[in-house]
Amino acid sequence: MATRGHTGTPRAGRRTRAAVVLAGLLLCAGCEDSLGQPPPRPAGPSAVAACLTGSGDLIADVDNDGRPDRITDPSHRGARLTIAFGTGSGRERAVPARGLADRPGNRQRYVRAAVADFDQDGWSDLAVVAGRAQGGDDPVPPRVAELRLGPFSGTGRSRRTVRLDLGATQDIAVADHNHDRYPDLAAYTYAGDGVYVFEARLGDPRTGLRAGTRAYTTDAGATGHHPPARLPHAGLTPFYPGCGTR
Image 1 (cartoon, rainbow, N blue to C red):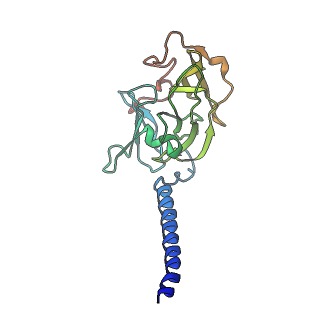
Image 2 (image 1 turned 30 degrees about the vertical axis):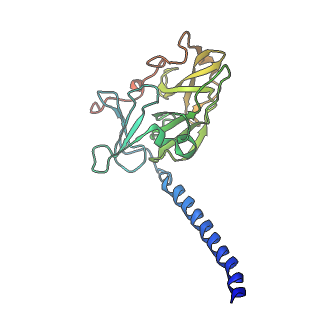
Image 3 (image 1 turned 90 degrees about the vertical axis):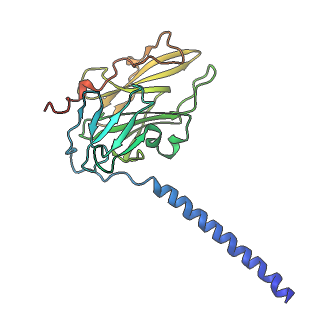
């Protein structure tokens, strides 16, 4: 009897370990699934006409569910950007910038986000920058610097993501640098040795935001670690009509 008990113990242990491994795999799969999938590929432009409210909030359908969403950013630098999905409905849900950063981004020290139709295809796109805080003389590049081309989900997932070649970016905002119909991106970036600069990425019909726009990089002057209240040329007004004016 003792021998049978001894030989049975390893089998029970193996079964226990297998059960633990299987439970772990199922748990991880459930965590991944909880982030959801990107919205379906749209057949054409959004049926919800994007517009600006009197307070400067952007109204647009960002997730292709046919309902308007409200995008607000009282910080004007991407730090407090929030999207109220299904605004005005019984299922309204507010998601801050960190919630839109997806798994790699929301674990970072800071998260910045900006929303506009950068490629002018009729769908709002999501620019996300996230990383560790700057420290010392050397720039710390962001862990995440991406443009998620719309439509995108409530966790910031889209079917097409473009990497942004931004430096050690601290803040971002939608801007109008070259006065065309494509929204641009302004970035407040640490260049190293105590020097901060304003960078720009121009709206583009193919990539959403164009790389290689160093001609628009300017010294940020005596701004230091704290950026100005508004980045240069920032604002959505040049690109959207007022709500109710069409």
